[in-house]
Amino acid sequence: MSAYVFDTEPLLAFLYTEPGHRAVADRLDEVAAGGHQGFLAEVNASELLYLIARIEDDDGTAAADSLRVADRDIGALTRHGISIERASWQTVGEVKTAGALALGDAHAVALAHEREATLVVGADDDFDALSVDIDVERFRDHGV
Image (cartoon, rainbow, N blue to C red; front, side):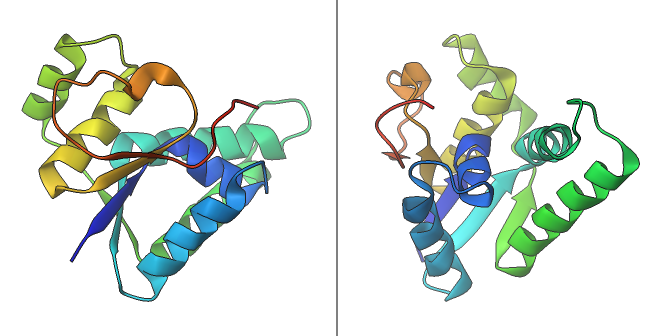
C-alpha cells in the first residue's frame, strides 16, 4: 500500500481552505478510503497544534479554548486515518546534517523515508535537494 506523509503546511491549508486545499483534501480522501496510509510526524503534530491554537486566538497566543480547537482538528485528522508517528532520531539527524531544513521539516522527510511514503509539502524550495531519496508532492506551486 502506498503512503503519504503530510508536512504541517498542507494540513493548515486544508483546515483553513487556503489555496491548494482541494489537492490536500484529495490526498486525505485517499487515506480515509483506505487506498493509502497517511502519516504525520510527531513534531509536525506539535507544530500543527500550536499554529492552529495561535490562529484561532484573536491575539495570536494560545489560550485554553483555542488549544481545544486545535486538539479537535488534529483528532479529526486521526479519525480519518492519519497516524501520528515518530521518526527515528538517527534518520532525522542525518537528514538535518545534510541540509538547511528546519527541524520539523527534517522529521517529515525522515518519516517519509522510513515509511517509503510520498511527502506532501507546500511550494517552498526547502525540499528540492534532500539527502535521502523520497518522492515529494507539492500541493501548490506558490506561497501564500
